[in-house]
Image (cartoon, rainbow, N blue to C red; front, side, top):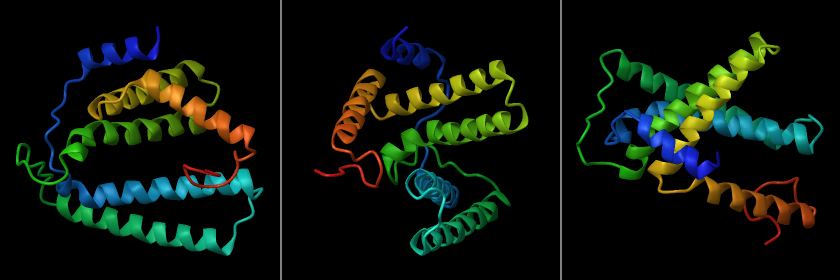
Amino acid sequence: MNFSEYQAFTVTTAKYPTDYDPKNFGGLLTALSAAGIICERTKKTLRDKEGKVTEETREVISRQVQRAGEGFTDFSRQIATEISANRGAGTGNTVLGAALYPLLGLFGETGELLDKIIQSPEAKDAIMKEMGDVLYYISELARQLDLNLDEIAVTNKEKLTQRKEKGLIHGEGDNRGE
């Protein structure tokens, strides 16, 4: 099976609405975005700086931790009463609205994958199933954004090959050395 075949399959099992107004999830999305930046900065510190935290990295992570806390606080205030999706409202970022469910699924399944690896690193079958769930939500996110997984893989391979040839695997930014 290739990615295109897998992506065609996932659409047959995708049963969720796509017309959410993302403004109603702003706090949660802010917190998840901040968590992603923290993970990315930590990864680059391990890869590029041998785990040595610079003052700049410390400041970035500190700001993102604060941002995540504020986002979770805002979202917790909202869910104290209800989560109002305002489906069909037609306001806000419609692309994000369509991508919201697969994005939340991707973050949720990534968290479950991390838990499995921490709790049972020898449980390869359980880890593989969680990785399959992550792949499912990546496929659905790509579909909602009208992207093809085969093309994503080819584009990523080309990008990484160019970076490797230029000695730019380490560093930051999507367009390194261009």
